Length: 132
Picture 1 (cartoon, helix red, strand yellow):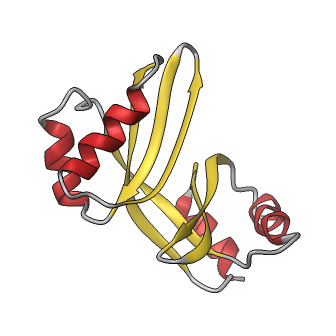
Picture 2 (cartoon, rainbow, N blue to C red; picture 1 turned 60 degrees about the vertical axis):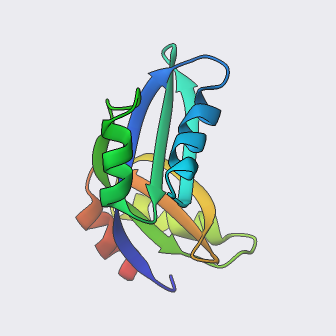
């Protein structure tokens, strides 16, 4: 791995209906928040989002005064990687060998570089596994 860091992000549960992702991303962008990475999914009849913005403090203010105020702040691991065949397999293999349980993950271009962003049951152990 080229670079690995622990970043603050948000996890949000929403209604599962058309337009929610547009409302969330529009709210953030209209308030000057650049979304550096975002994941979204539906399960158990709810929408779920995990995202990192340029300014955690400002995004928190925006969310607190919006209909999306039921968020929680979490630590996410950002691991820069190569954009080639097998890089995700190498990454997940290191975590598996260290018995790290991945809660969710997504790939993105983070600060202009390919990266895997994820949350695990033990981010400290995950960081150690990826540094070796």
